[in-house]
Length: 357
Image 1 (cartoon, rainbow, N blue to C red):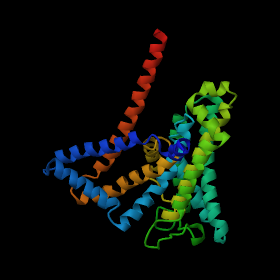
Image 2 (cartoon, rainbow, N blue to C red):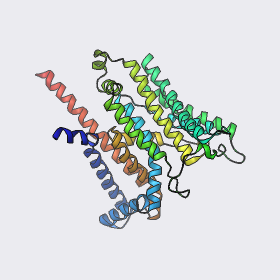
Image 3 (cartoon, rainbow, N blue to C red):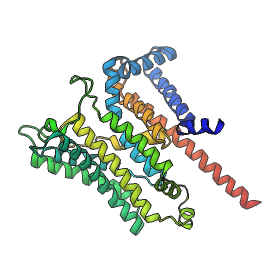
Image 4 (cartoon, one colour):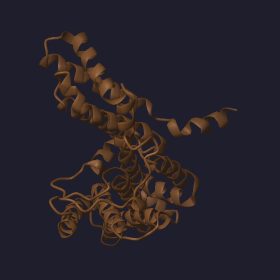
């Protein structure tokens, strides 16, 4: 009975420290609101929590929009989780998400295709585009040992400027965006046309399960996690390190690219000229860290960050700077990072103690 229950709760283990980090982040934000207002500690706390709640979950419209904000973060969070589990820091998820949007927009502009062919092609094109974009720095790391962080950062900028080039060549008259996608290339809005929530949320949840099954229920996932846990031990055990590095990056990019395609086909319906990064990939880093790279934890972490991003506008209506929303996110990340640093120092001390014995 105990073994069965442990298996059931295995996906949500280790989230206690993340919950504490969120609580501490909120408490510290209350202090900053108190300093900048004249409402006192309890009044500031009430004002902050009330505005955050009303801006994200307080009404049915805001609740639905929170899920809209969370969908791309689920994909980018999962993409980072796969890379983290393999010991890689795929900071290029941002660029892979952008390439997914670009491929979806280009394929979406193909005229005359029926919906049952067009929509799958749009999503598949975005996923393949993201996978190829991530596999390039993965191959460079596996083949030459170059740092994936540097390569993926450069790939982000290439993705942004490539998108702008394509948009400039295909933009609709009087706009800085491509033409609107035809209905055959868009996802359905199942709650009505007045809401932006699409069937993409179900695809996101399916991928949460798929990533969990991949990492913990397959030989491929075991090898990926083994490489991330101890590179040298995995190689000694006969695992092909280079293959798994490229595979992990490609899978990570595939998930990010699919997220970009779903964002285009479900929300934007056209590719816009980018004057900066949309930040879904960068926010995904925080989502994966708070979730401890657990696919099921990514759902709740994405909803949290989606709610904070959405409610930043509501904060200003209550006289609170929208920067408080980003302050909460940053503080949460700092506490999560502090936990990793604490573990690192503890492990280092244990090793030194063993050497001295």
